[in-house]
Image (tube, rainbow, N blue to C red):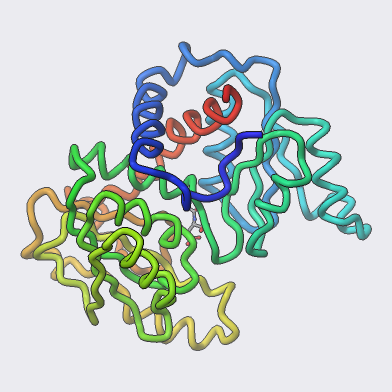
Length: 299
Ligand code: NCD
């Protein structure tokens, strides 16, 4: 059963495959790939979502599929049904499952008990592989290359699952990576060490955002729902904000990305800057997720 749980085993060619298929999808939003008529995609979201859930549903419908949106609040899980039983039932009603859950490893567990493909739409602070593919697609589309870029990752690197999925592909494409976060929200040293030893990743730390060398500044929000103290989240947030002044000596082509939602990391005045590409990035969710659904349903 071919789903998408993690990008951990992906090689450059796998990423290239998804990016070219996404490009094809982007050119044919209305017809060519409308070949999945009659099939059903179910979205099971146990955490809030706007972009991921809706763009998966839009992608499925663009492919001619129907969608079922499981509602946690009104489902039998409220009567005490186990997640495993819920998954088995939904799998019997669908051709593919897209799941988001606060607990790390849930998508993998789902893929082991469902006999249809399962896509990980975020498992706790662990991974968000489809968002990373959208990020890579956006970078390639905007800068026309992925190889050897200078990338600054900013914010909650400890709990930010989009970062966890994006780092390895960036290292595969020999990015020069700068990590900017408060010390409490640094990436796990284990993750950095393994990327350095496996891929020779070039990763360094900085205390603040220096836009002058960056090709990409990738902002993230504080994952306050994963903090034990909300005051701590609030205090740390102030340390990871982008300002218009910081962009004054940026390269002309530099792009700013953010998986969204933003909580003040990027002030609205930056939205009109030619560097701001986060709304484009969100829009790219549809063709990239069409490519992922198509691929999972045809392999
Ligand atoms: C991200 C997520 O859910 O991890 N959102 C998204 O899918 N675009 C980022 C976030 O919530 O901060």
